Length: 158
Image (cartoon, rainbow, N blue to C red; front, side, top):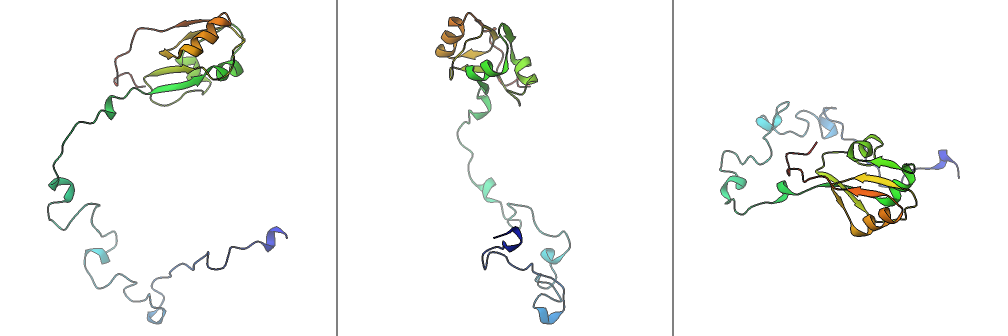
């Protein structure tokens, strides 16, 4: 079997519907759009949720409850084995440096270090949160961990 012998399974590919190719094609004249009206026009149609002027369902239903999702704290996750691979012995590590090498990106409220992997190098971390196992591993290797004062939530996302 060669590349030129490959083809899709029977019935897997369909011919594109060719509109406006004569009346005998079945898609001629109005090209499947019916006769006149808003949906027959070029660019015509109604927006999602529009119900012909009737009060839309989303506005008819009561709005209840409170959603805490907007107040959620989002941390950039880094494991100690990632630090072991990417940094030299004695490195000072903070959020700016982690963003610079691409370990974390996007809008975050802070950095959280998890304890997966082993550490043999000394690191001086300045992070917002660290698990007890990660802290133990870093301090056992001779490093240090600094947790700065809390940032205000939500407003601090970069």
